[in-house]
Image (cartoon, rainbow, N blue to C red; front, top):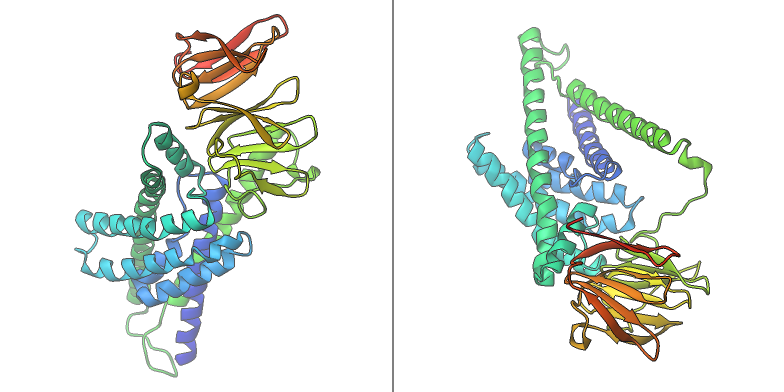
Length: 395
């Protein structure tokens, strides 16, 4: 009987770790505004207690760190979540609506409490989820303080994630109890020949759920690859590709814009600042006081790099040196620059959140006009006939 109990514990633990791993892979593959990496942690906490749940959370972080090294550090969040769920769910009113909302909200708050400091230390304050990072960028644009923006972005993901995860866990617990009751009713008082104790259906239940999780993950992954192949007309494996992220050289984890200067250098603009890529490594250009939060990049015919920031106006880079800075104090309509282009007549059009500024570099950087009716430009382009087209929030 002891050997059977140990087998049940190992099988159930493997199931929980698999749920965490495949849940995270599924959410990342489909780019959902969720994590889904705490399903197994919550399930184990509900059934086996908070300590076992914490062990599952830590083990899941170690497993997933084989793909993303920083995931090991975020095991701290999983451990805290397991302790919270395992202890609070016992004090909740069964599966009532109040108890459910209490546990899920508390779990989300604890996740934010532990995740935000880790984001600040290891990910420049970003969540690593495109939806959460979008919330951070939006809040920054409207002038909300940096720390509050980061908290809002993390909470946006965590609250939805914990509500959905807890719903799935409750469904799994009910399913396991239902199968247990059915099996018990069928076996009745029949006992094991050697131990004389009721038949234990947990190994079968755990094995079935584990098989279901592995099958579902395989099907979803295969279906996703087929969708991508249909959209592109061919498999991605036909190409040599490298994806740069916060795990291999691009610490911010996301890019708002990218441009290449005449010397072959790639410049990447992110919420964390400007990065220079020479083909081998990324270098954070943290020495530019006027470049902290990059929205857009533009390279003109002379090879100058124009940098539009979210809160410091416009900077012009030649080589590795900032040669011009123009902000709201210097006459720019707004310090938030959204897009830049050069027309065929040599004028530069700079779209801001306030209006469109026309600049010239003849005799130094000067203002040549202002199009007040063109507010909050998102995209701008020019042809060789002197036409300039712009897309704004209004059309």
